[in-house]
Image (cartoon, rainbow, N blue to C red; front, side, top):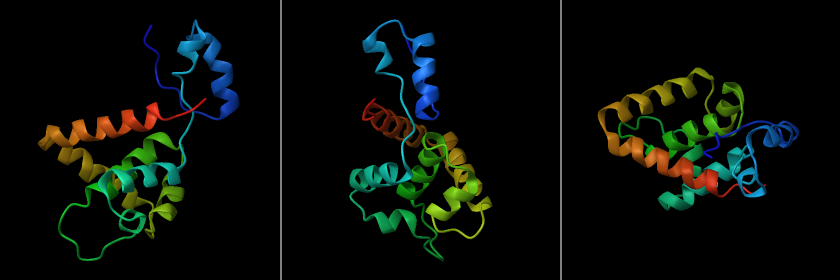
Length: 132
């Protein structure tokens, strides 16, 4: 049986496990939310950069800051934080900057399938580290 990812508060996850999982081993595959700190720390380690390079806005930078873009996208997908909370985490003044960054990453993934595969690999690694 292939289980879908389930994101939600711990009570919700505990309640839904019995509906979608038949055995204890399958229940362990159902995941809970990650914290933004966990996601950012994982990406900083993966890309061998400082956390500040991911959470700090670099003014005037023309190159793509993929560790930051991946962190924003994965935090949006895995933490359950709203756009304003994500804006606070990533030190941007307006939450629309979060949407714009995710849009740039989505456009890049359409152009470059390697970027899309890299994001999926990072997501899978983060999800596999979840302990229930």
